[in-house]
Amino acid sequence: MIDLENKTENNFLHKKQKHSGFPSPAGDYVENPININELLIKRASSTFLMRFKGNEMLFVGIKDNAILVIDRSITATNGNVVVASVDGNFICRRLIINNKKMLATACHKNSYIDIDLILDFEILGVVTSSINIY
Image (cartoon, rainbow, N blue to C red):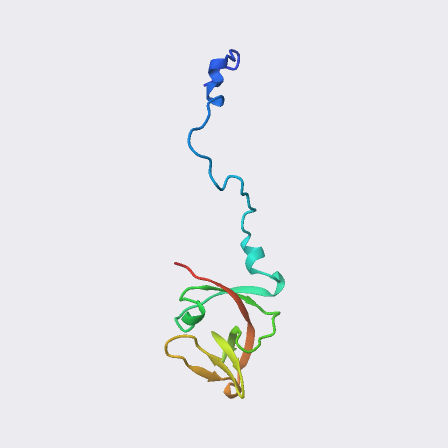
């Protein structure tokens, strides 16, 4: 405890000591902290998050238990990864638009769903990012 009544130079010697060693090379480089919302969410009012279960999208970098960032305001085009409602179930697949419109997996055993054959179908949004949990 420092005696404030008796402020001698000896009480504050630690403030005059110099640090030994080399300065950090990153000491001159100061960056603003990363804001995950600014980085991943462009339109907050139309973006939602969903947890992905399964291994059907491994080849596009989406692993089991990943968190998907989905933007409803983006119009889905050929090659986009989308989240869709198929007969009341949510699925994440790559949208393929050629002669037919299809949803495709991205794994070792690719499977395809012909969109025209589904009665209850809706694209909920385009996946803009995924966060994989390790």
